[in-house]
Image 1 (spheres, protein in one colour):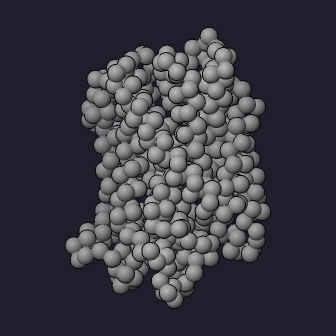
Image 2 (image 1 turned 90 degrees about the vertical axis):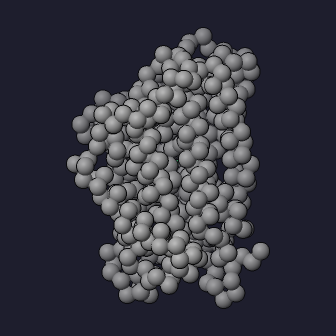
Image 3 (image 1 turned 30 degrees about the vertical axis):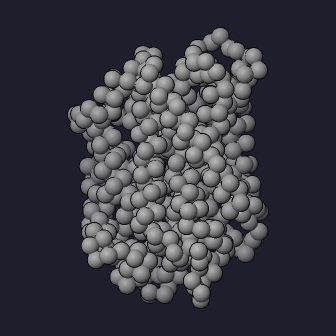
Length: 454
Ligand code: TRP
């Protein structure tokens, strides 16, 4: 398969080996804690079915067209989002206002990374717990009190956060291709498989009827405008769109990649993993009389109930949290790829050095999130929101949708149609649909949800 058309510009940071690797890597960026940890707990905080409905509509109507726009911009520019935007704007003689897309990609990525590494660390903690159980150290405490004890232990949170920052820095610093390609090819299928096993268990032992009703029952009185904003934010977060990560990945995509098919595959897999995660967690929540709206600890309290009771639970628990941790790692890498690629271009610096500097910055910022679960849990920055809550909401509910809005407006209204046609290679009808979604539906959708939440 040809990787690049003869005469096409050689991307500054290399190319994915083929189009499948691109799809896998982008799926690796999309599938992560957002699906398995964030989706169930945010759904729980927002009352279930109606939230999921708005989420699904956002994924299709706003997420898909924006994802396609990002990939096409990246493949057109073949550089970091900042440089890509600078080149495209320069060539077309457009306003520098659109550079905002590039800058947001750098800033939002660093913000999300900072707290994402903390939560990724939680999976490592659970891994060590279950690996310990295999070797015989069984705690007699129940899952909830063990979890509360862990969250209170700031040094331990920071230790595991540090581990993930180091792993991500090494992967990005060493050049994404080898580490990332291997991790995604092996781990994503493993994660899918294990989730199916857990789904079967939850259907068998959980309160599946109540869990399913909770997810399917659409009651908008429980949602409200904030819930709609959260659902849209979750769609952007889960698909990894709105901050140029897929633009950066698209820059390394081979010319023969079908952007439409790729975006469709990534979106489907990502949504499927989130729904299955919900179908695993909620039946267990009801079976164990837990509170669905209990917040960020949800995944880490419900599943241990399972692993504590099933045969070979320690082994299953270990494998599961390792896989979730690897899913988190593939997302962490994508979060700092835009900033890394840009600094490498800008200072002509060594990748590893750049990655280390970014890692240190994000680590420091992440301390605020790690401490939000213990020493600073009563330090409210805004209303009753901790530092972690603020960074999480600011990025998912505001920066990502704003970034997505700008990307849709730029791709839909500013880019010349022949450039779009050449990149997307859609038929007349397909192109018309894409234009309609990108120009009208996605921008109006984002703006409406913003307005209603004010
Ligand atoms: N989609 C990731 C997840 O669900 C989180 C995420 C948001 C992300 N934006 C991103 C990952 C950008 C990589 C790049 O876990």
